[in-house]
Amino acid sequence: MQRPPPILILLVAFCVAIAGTFIFAFRAGRHARRLHQEDEPIRPWMSVPFIAHTHHVPSAALFQALGLEPQPHDRRPLQRIAREQHRPVEDVVQDLQRALASAGHTHPAVEPPAGKAP
Amino acid sequence: MREQILAALAQYGAPALFAVTAIASIGVPLPVSLLLIVTGSLVAQGVMPMWLAIALACGGSVMGDQIGYAIGRYGGAALVSRFSGMLGGPERMAKAEAHARRWGGPGVFLSRWLVTPLGSLINFTSGIAEYPWMRFLMWDVLGEALGAILYILLGRIFSDRVLALDAAMGDFTWMMLALLAAVALGWMLWPYVRRTRG
Image 1 (cartoon, one colour):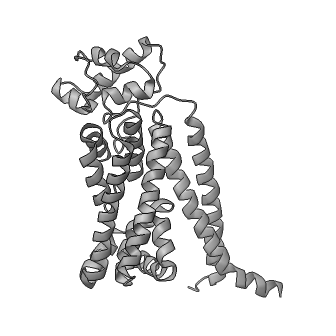
Image 2 (cartoon, chains in turn brown, red):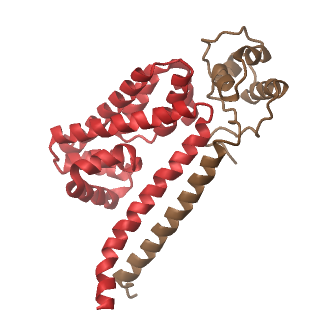
Image 3 (cartoon, chains in turn purple, cyan):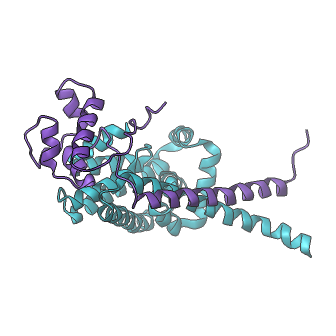
């Protein structure tokens, strides 16, 4: 089989690089718009004060929703809280979502942890 | 892995930041940009002072980079070829080595904060190409300091939008890589175009 001329390979690679530039620029722009539009999803690595900060609610309300004593320096991630309360982390997230909703925040669908998506 | 690393940062703060940036700079694929952005958010929340966050992120990264450089320089051919398999194969390593020789200091500097996916490759290849260590260290410290300040500051400004910011920065980095590739390929194509027109 005859190899394609080098210019053809270069031309195809050039077109792919140009297309990639536009595709990633578009995606970056779309994510940048999200910066002003949506609340952050809740992830198992986040701590209660972190979630309170990203949703602009007092952390005490979220600690209470999980049946915990409000402590601003308690920075345990949700996955550890769930383990200590012997329940799935999804339950903990749902409790927090309810607490955020009652505090006047509508919340985006909770994304599964990275690498575990279907 | 990503969840565990971010959980460690949220809970332990400074030591986790230093350890993860150092390990990632050696070449282990860890979510460093998100880690730095979350660190910026923790700074905004008053968990960590800004100067400490920048010093630890920069210090950890520079330490990891020096290990990568030393592996390339003193590790021997067998060790280098083993790492090359992990990092995209000998062909990609050869390209990065050529890049290290050709671009030297500015290449080290830009790969610390602008085209970060090339960072650990350039550490190895700078060592293999025996790029002078003091010059490597100088460009490395400058680039890592700028990268740490940039990402942590952005994380501090958008402290309530860390995931969206990380996604935007990730795509921006790939856009810059694609643009660099397009410019390089355009440069290679230019003689053909001139010959056709002439």
